[in-house]
Length: 109
Image (cartoon, rainbow, N blue to C red; front, top):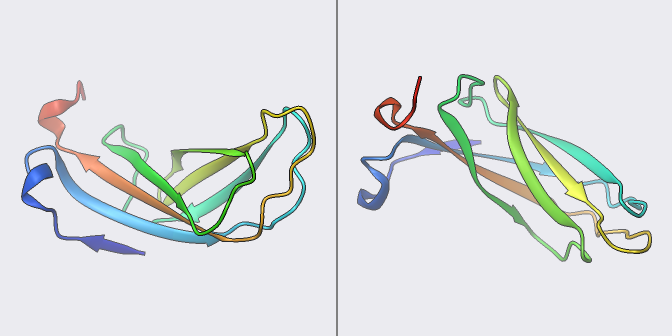
């Protein structure tokens, strides 16, 4: 869990970039089902200014897709979704989430 200094490329768009990590269970996900994984990122807030920029995984997801959203103060929920025709068991692995706080001049808030 870290907040990093912004590169010049994004200095006018994001006020902060923050990361967090969690380990997925590596258990089976049934057809058309999903698992959730809570990732703690202390800086994020559910105030409309934080967005998930990337979900990075340390191994193969075996055809499972990953999506994420800020769901509470300090928490990003990662959704591991199995859209295939059969059960899939992705390997247990580290999931890293990168989130950014959008400058309020770019929001309707």
